[in-house]
Length: 309
Image (cartoon, rainbow, N blue to C red; front, side, top):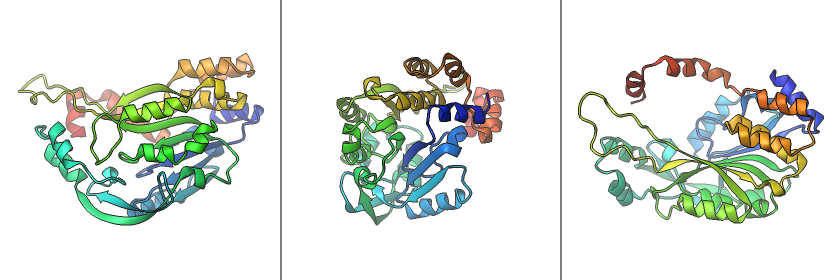
């Protein structure tokens, strides 16, 4: 089935658009390539340099609409300090917790590089806003909310508490941690308790883990468990999902790779059996990554590990 066929099936169900929000949009917007023509995308990136790069990158974009925002999402409106680190992806509303960072990772071979990545470059004042306030004039549900804000994810969620309470956010992808890398950082357990109290169900917790171990030579001493961070996927409990939101959430679960759960949602809708099969058979791909994936598939594990390093 082609992309146009998938969109046609969705439009048969009066699904004309999807609403994506990416909070912490450095480098690229987290979006589904095939669904871009019917996706209204909003990206938040408070780092001025990274925001300019995003605007240049997405001057010609595939989305139905695109809005890139310089505000920082938090649990209050006003202005906040934003800590820009030497490696921009580690920038946060929170200052680094170097003492705890060293305690957990100080003996690792990569620690010097990691410590340099998280070192402070500068502090800038940026406007902050709650997601509830930003969305006050929006009528559509948020179909997909991705949050990667280096330790302040719960602040972003608390700033969206009205929308969460009203069951108006369907699928969430949130970076979480089991070790505090930043001062006053909340951990995965805090976010999990908060979202479960709002009616959300954990689908997966994907840790950033490298399980490579050398066959020859001496392995690095006790360095096989250093992945305290990952992405947690949540979905609104099906009892709160409307017919339309079940279908949209099912499609997003297929895109994220959770086919069984996605098919279960589709089966609990009035969509025809043929359309259910067509949607579940659709294979989401990112054309720009096919060459990269081919190289990964063909590359020997030892060489792949060396290239990554």
